[in-house]
Amino acid sequence: MLDFEGMINGIKQAPAGSIILLHPCAHNPTGVDPTKEQWKEIASVMKEHDLFPFLDCAYQGFATGDLAQDNFAIRHFVEQGFELCISQSFAKNFGLYGQRAGAFHYVVASASDSSEAIKRIASQLAILQRSEISNPPIYGARIASKVLNDPELFAEWEDNLRTMSGRIIDMRKALKGELEKLDTPGTWDHITSQIGMFRYVLALLNTIQY
Image (tube, rainbow, N blue to C red; front, side):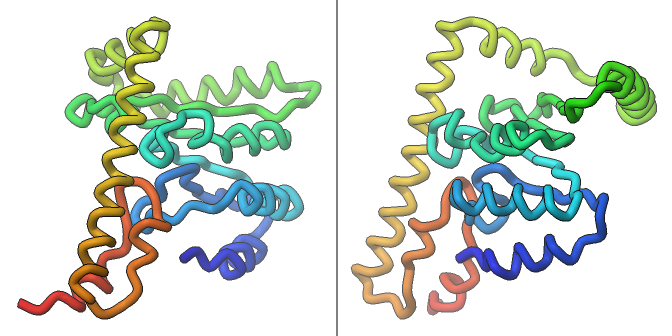
């Protein structure tokens, strides 16, 4: 269960200009995602306190199987006029773990000097890229680019994501059902109320007797 009040209070205590790292969907490691209304409140509080969002999108499509629904938080922050960063991984939702393919996006706030800001940011990103990885592997990026830019392949990929996320949801339901069938002590609603690839398992491990 998300301690939303505690989360909001923590965000409010951050100094102005602080970078707040957020997972838009399928939160790792809790599997607990804010609701759309909670995302709106998070954005409102961050706007009020002049905080900078860094959205780490590693599991888009693995939460609900719907790419648009899983990126609601990103779209909402952009619509609210935030300047922000987005790191997007294709390692998981494309099965490209060995390639570590992904994308980094910097969204510049609308202003009269936006074009100059874009030039300065692009220059700094080029310096960082050169010093950190210089020449990244291109094979995985080409696979992702091919799928994302081909309507037929893109539709097939979306269908694959729905299959994968549906399987995760079915496995959660099956696990919860079996625990309840065995009269395992405790409440197991969190297994199906959480979402994506991760969930808290300590309660489960503590009740298993070997």
